[in-house]
Length: 71
Image (cartoon, rainbow, N blue to C red):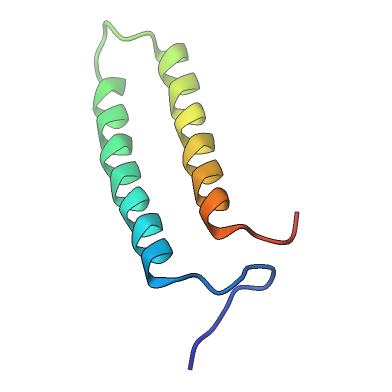
């Protein structure tokens, strides 16, 4: 039985693979940012801004692929 999310169209296997790859990349990036948080020489304010910007970018590309019909 195939389930779908409300407001989303049925995704292709290729689209799901790309989203899963982006999730893997996001995990690696998150680990790198976590490591940088321990560096005393890194400006933590800019690091926090970068983290937020990366989160937004990953959300945007996921939405671009999944093309939800709802707000």
